[in-house]
Image 1: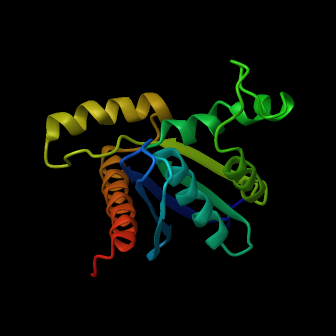
Image 2: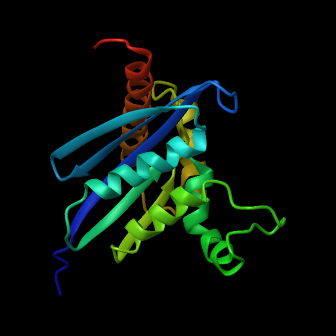
Length: 188
């Protein structure tokens, strides 16, 4: 039986200049990819954190999807974001009243709840961790990180796919920086 489900790849990144400081600027960026079609989104917030921006990038991506039966592949360099879903941290958090195993309140509960609501609208979502800020021209570095990528995500990605995913992560990073620049008042 042929699988006719549409595949959407989502590449996300978040950034924060002055992370954890009282006055800072954060940005998020994402590219949604369906076949040859791409849609780029970005934005920013003042007085935020890097983790919030990573989460916002994914949230805005999912909100941008139209209803439909998709296979969704999410690529992010945020281990915080990816591990929450691949290791299912959110299940224990919800069972424990949004308290961590160390008995502290879960940070960013508001965004986790929104993300879970959006994710639950889809039946077929896969999360993949990537290494951010790689130099794709450094072949020894790329070979090393390809092996690490496979250890995180399985060996079903080719080196060519890994390089493409890395390039798309670089694009998402540039979009996040564009979101911060917009808040700083820089023109493009």
